[in-house]
Image (cartoon, rainbow, N blue to C red; front, side, top):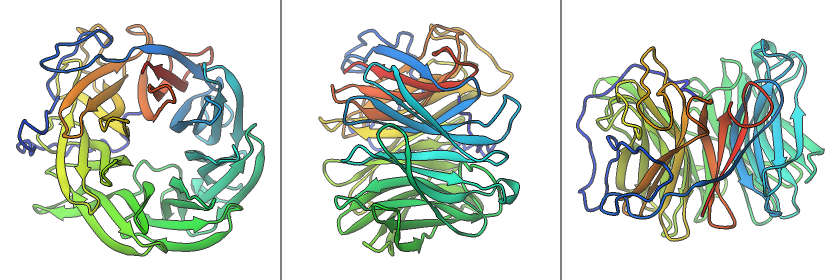
Length: 442
């Protein structure tokens, strides 16, 4: 489970700002009662995928997964963090887990220093089958959980080849990376934060973008006009950076989605923002086949009654094409349900699939849906076509009331399916919470 660390109460009663129904359908009030059966073709064309397998891997301590991918050998990699020494320990270590194509554990690597807080956030695989991890790494000399933005390179068996710590003031970490054709790595993140530890959104920090060579040596480094860089992708002759930042609108400070275009040296060329009344936060994006971008996050704006998943579609210049919200797939009271999306990918046919979690964080409780109580977080998957029209939405988890399974990220699989990386306390032999690998059928 990953309830928002940004639980602001600034909820909006503004009208939904969506294109015509020919282009976008908002699923905010849809109530699905069966996540695996064929649905009404007039509402949700297509068949929802089923769970092929679901495993939990990790340690006997509390874990949280941030990102994952499918490796060239057909297996899967995931990165996140685990408690360092005990269930009472508030200090985390980096955890990287490799499973085979069936979810069986191949290896797991725990990286950290005793007595400090560290976290793993981003992961890549190189053509040589090495692994690049973007993390926040501390040392025993760092006070108050202050981390440094760091890159790690491991071999295909999880053995550390090198680490490069990029020194800066305050707390920092790498949040997103992309691998260039020449083997260089472009990374974004935050630094100079006065607040220690992992930050969901680094509000008081300085965002950065940098390029390093295959050994981690710094080639260039540039500050961003936001407090953090969240994700980065090549775009034209430079890079596109996704972020969440602050704007002053209608007399109040509020979060907005930022899309920043830089040149090949990380210098800002233009910045676009997307927002509605309320808080608007972005966590992942994908470049679409037409050169534009699909952005996933969540919002209390756009007419939402609480946090709803937010999907924004732009052209290659950042021009808004459409935006839509989706949420409350189990039909519970929308005033209490949080729908939080963290991953998005374009499918081969141009459809978009967005994933996150749905559940509540209040004393409110309802148990009228076949998947289980509103208190139990489920993986939430939304698929729309290129115009934003809903194809289907579904919730996934294990048996009702067996535990949480909120999705934190996704990757498209080689067989045309989807892998959900989730926080699970229902799968696996370890307790209390593990990295979940949930394979959905093509």
